[in-house]
Length: 437
Ligand SMILES: NC(=O)N[C@@H](CC(=O)O)C(=O)O
Image (cartoon, rainbow, N blue to C red; front, side, top):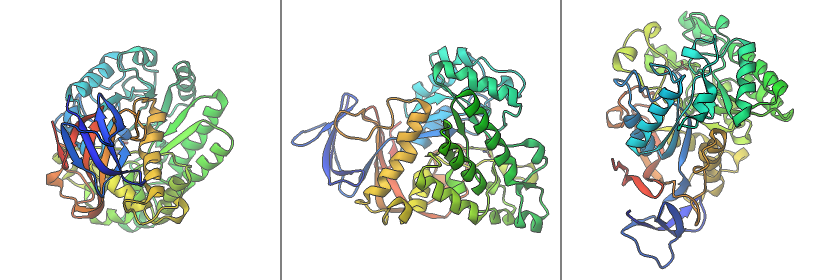
């Protein structure tokens, strides 16, 4: 196995040091030699990123993404582990399908692919899926979600929350009161009124989160809220956490940056579920993320084939790519925030890098139960890490992305921070910004 010596690299903004990667672990590199030497001057070493919410589309829509292409996109984005959503075809609602996805991830060998199991059979919201069998499978599923659909029936949601307690599992809810979003095309507000498009009101998300935190409190179980998108949701989560409810939440990079004004382009690349909201929602989400009311940044990487996106808005599928841009967007939105103690995003900006590590690696690893991930790259830790050049700026070109799909909303945007290298258990998956497999 190749050994790597990374010289003069700053671990999370600290004084530069040398790191040796050998036998899957990080070692002190002072005075050491290795097969490959990397000049780490000006680079920041972060724990490998962990994504709680990735759509890999395999099995079923391999024309949009495969486990391998999505894994490559993830490694290039600085990830060493991704949680693969269950809304595949067939749905990942059996031990067989989750094991298949897990094995495909192992075969690709670019990131650890941790399958998420469906909560209900076929995501239909009527009968619980075989949660125990998925937990016992080689994929060791701990997180369950019907993402794309809300577990709407409160009795079923209660049962699911109770069931997963036996193996410290967690239910990740796509919070959408669908009776309030019938025919919805975008956020309900001034912009939807101007465009004459049916709106998806904030209350449809908030009503379910409020219900679910009460259910989680009642049964003493763990709830995770997917892609929180409104200021009101942040308030409900703050209240629930203050009461001691075991609830965690994620926000996507696009909900931290883009507003519903984008719908006026009628370009379906801007259509996503939950929809892009308003600037005051963005402000509350950013503050919630800095404060920790929102625990994690998760991509909701949702690749779609051209024919599902290059069509009229109402017919287009919701979803955006996220894996290759998430770190840069997060750096952009968190840099300079006084409430996070963050500076300009430079190499010595310890507060910013610590916050990024917390929200994009340590905490998501903990939520998903991925014990080998989320460790700072210091001697003794598993060598799952990524090297970032904070001074580099790059322009998003959809044709240059590794994902099989092209539906990025960031085309032509110049972003800060570039992933230079990623290591999975000491093996380079990305070097010089290029995938190694
Ligand atoms: N987030 C999205 O906009 N799309 C998701 C599912 C969903 O949540 O609708 C997808 O699978 O494409």
